[in-house]
Figure 1 (tube, protein in one colour):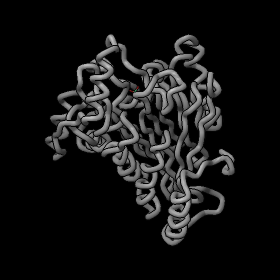
Figure 2 (tube, helix red, strand yellow):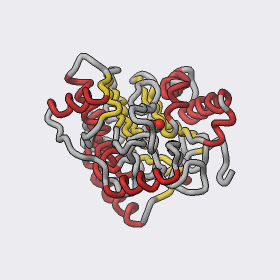
Figure 3 (cartoon, helix red, strand yellow):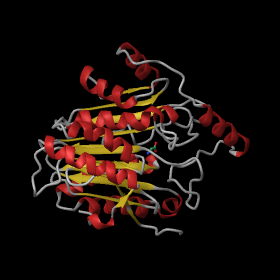
Figure 4 (tube, helix red, strand yellow):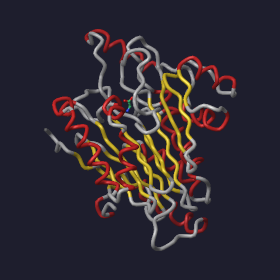
Length: 340
Ligand code: GLY
């Protein structure tokens, strides 16, 4: 478990909001002194806002799956700080915004959509695939068609900001996609970055669910699918053990079935952080030269509500909201230190 003294409060306003929420929480959820449940954790700084929404469900004793869907819809909606999820996603190299997402519940049910266009909330469509079809995954036009049949709004998703970025990129890019790394210009990957939101929650009953949603690598080839909609790669949940999710260059996560690996390592007794670290080390060991240029981060939680993360590059962070603390943003540990 992370030492709580190390967390960063995002702002004074955030701190007072946290105090308010904590007092509201005490009235609605019976706090067990030996646990921090319920809890929701999410990748990156924008995960704080997703967690806030998820918490509204968890604090009422609601189901982790509902919390995940509600939370993931926040960055999918219109997050101006983030160009790699949902409506504000950066397009592929041909100018199409194509979205990937998956969701998994405490029973091992899962649903997923990949390379889906014109629907702003892929996490909700992934849940519909899980609950309303005999399938796990729908892709491309089939996913859009299904979403419309289910009542989702079909709309143009390319924002003026994303279109401008794409046109700028076209001037010099020679069709080289931009790898997702992190916020910040001193790391490989460049200015178009940020990445996937991966979320994991445990509700007051102790049940675990997770979700993952992204527009994927900026300016990717049309039809490219990353790790985020792939169960076992971008997300995996086992209600007996815990859950894991990933962010960064999806190709390397898929090659190593990353999130499944993290959960299986926790099953063998590793802490969430150590399991994430081992998964990162496998990626580095297989492709050490590639690993210097890319980011991959894993985030995990075990059944007890202990959590941890590890990334290839510095700069990765994750957000935590639990029965004891809210609005935490924790720097993830990494293989390469800052500035390298
Ligand atoms: N992790 C997001 C992607 O590679 O598409």
